[in-house]
Amino acid sequence: MDKVAKRDMIGTGHPVTYCYGQTNEFGVVKVGTRFTKQECDEKLAQSLPKYLAKLDACLKVELPVKTKAALLDASYNAGTGAVCKSPMVAKMNAGKIAAGCDAFDGWYVRSDGQVRKGLVARRAGEKHGDHRKSERALCLEGVDEGLPKPAKKWWQR
Image (cartoon, rainbow, N blue to C red; front, side, top):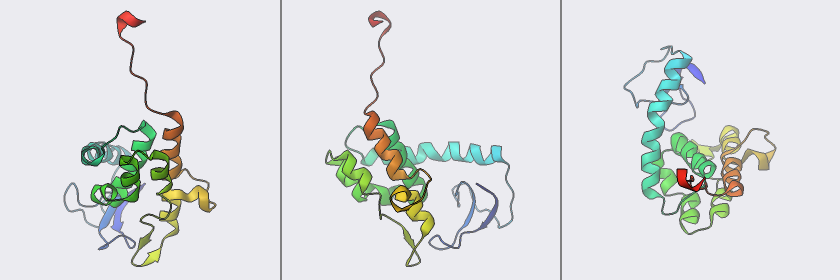
């Protein structure tokens, strides 16, 4: 997390970025503006439901929680429009959930025409020697866990 706003030298258009990758969602922020962890957490909590609503609109199948969380993470990073047009969503909407998870590998790993190690790690780093959990790995964890079980009614307990 970056609590001080700075110019994103990797992103398209080089916007000012802060906290967990916010740009101009909450208005223009000047380079050097400082944020507390609480402010950053609050902005993230305000952002994610907006991304999730747009993501849900393009999903035609029910997905496991972690699988959808991986898509939400990608939406927050690359934009929901890009995710909705991605091979991940196309495969998942066709009922091929695991294949959709595998499609994270190589998707949106370039900026300014260059492959970015950080984006490779974010999408499918475990396949490329990175130890952090990637969107692909989180997505596949969801596949392994399956859909959530419906809650039992009080009279079924």
